[in-house]
Length: 306
Ligand SMILES: [Zn+2]
Image (cartoon, rainbow, N blue to C red; front, side):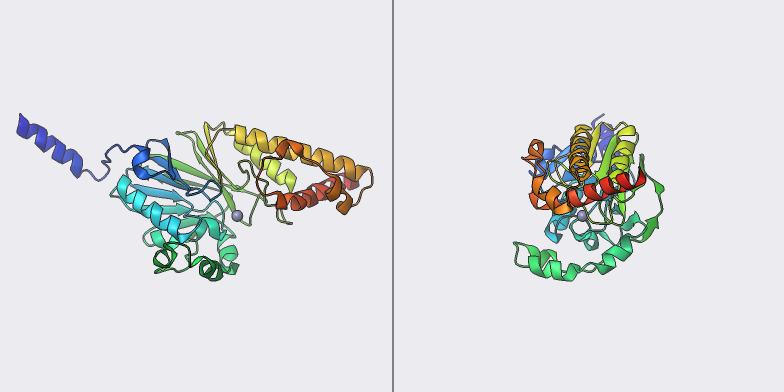
C-alpha cells in the first residue's frame, strides 16, 4: 500500500504542471495573490505592476518591471511558483517602466504588444535611463546581459491568446496613455488589466496626442466587460471602483474646464482658476496642467461643433 502511495506521489510530482500550493507571504511583501496561479508584483505602490499568470503550459507575464532589479525579482518568484518557463510577455504599454525587464525573460519568451509599440520602444533612450539608475542597490548585477527586446508580435485591435487552461483576450485601447496601450481580459477568471487608461489615486499623465473622450470610451468599454478584479498599470489591484473614481475625475474636470472656457477664459486663466479639491489626496499634482490642456481642447472642440 505504502509503495503505491509513494508511486502515486512520484507520478504527481513528475507532472510538469504540478505546483505545490504556496502562500503569497512566502513570495515576499511585494507580491499579491489575486487567484490561484495569478500574482501581482510591485516593489513600491507607485511602481508599475508585473503580473504572473501560471498555466499548465508555462507562464504569461504582463509587463516586466519598473526596473531591471524588479525583473530579476519576478524571475526568482516565477521559479518558486513553477518549473515551467515564461512563454509569453504581454506589454500593457511600450514605456521603459513596463518593458525594461524583457531581456530577463526573452528568449525564450515571445513578447506581444499592440502595433506601434516597437517604434515607440526604438525611440526611447533606455540606455540613458539604465545608466541613471545604475547606482541603485543591485542594479549593476541586474543589468548584466541587458539588451533592448522589441516585441516579436504586434497585433492590431484584438488578439486571443490560449495558453494551457487559460484564455487571454488582448484589446487595444486607443489614445489613452501611449502609442500602443493594451487591456488584457481573462473572461473565465473575470480579471481585467486596464493598463494606464486608469490609475489608482494619481493624476493621469496626459500627452498632447491623447483625448479625454477616447479615455472615457475605453473605461466604459472595460466596465462593460463586468470584471471582478481590475488591475491598473500602476497601483494596487482593486475592483470597478477604480473606474468609478476615474469617471468621476474626468466628469468633473471636463465640466469645470468647460464652464470656465465657456465664460471666455484663456487656457492660462483656466489653469490658474481650476480647483479639484475632491482629488487632493492624489499623487502627481504636477500633471494637472496637462490634464487641463486636454480638457480645454475638448471643450473648445465641442463649442466649435455646436
Ligand atoms: Zn507609461
